[in-house]
Image (cartoon, rainbow, N blue to C red; front, side, top):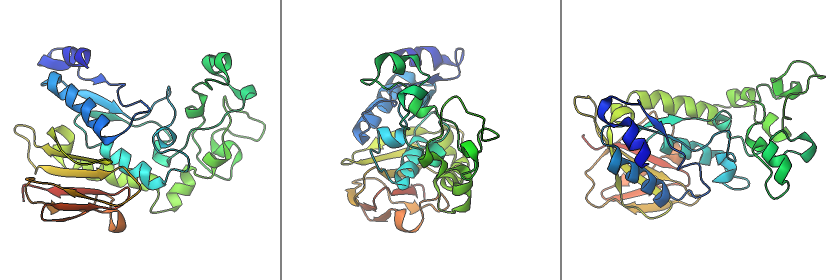
Length: 275
């Protein structure tokens, strides 16, 4: 974090620096907050880049969500990622809520996995082909039944291919699109400052404030990273008007009444506290 700050501050160095600090097995709300606050304390006018997944770690849907994680979990964690100050990297397949693949030893390509099997199965589980069409050979990634890609396509990935997501208006893929489009309309989420609000696990709560000279309201954002409904006391946080259009509609949208914020399982709340 100290190196990130040194190489991006001052306006005459790198535009941003990529952080590995959220590619961990640890994923509590307190841990996420700690990583961001530590960077913010040092980076000043520099700029970070956050990611929850890449080609070197187990897929976040499995690594953080655990076995059988709900697609709703994939939605709330990407919304949280895209609400942090800094740029974000989205890893291919996360927009389909793909899980870590189990690759047979004879199909492994990663030298580390081959060498250290079975104690360490390598990184191939997150590197499998992108599944495009569920009914086609290799889920549409390669043409022809006799063409074998570098790594196999797991059946559970084919069942959650792009075409399956496209056909479901409530899919993770459609949520990604809706949330990203809405985020573009909120300058505070794109370029603004950040401060966190004390909240019990598994809630991550924060306020994004407009950058100097930028239009738009301050945004209160709260995310329930757990599978049970929870009520949070927002204390002295100013009143807010709930935003719409971000994709957390109906049963997944939080409800604020005074200082109390009720968040459903894997739900979120976005409010305009400038209203």
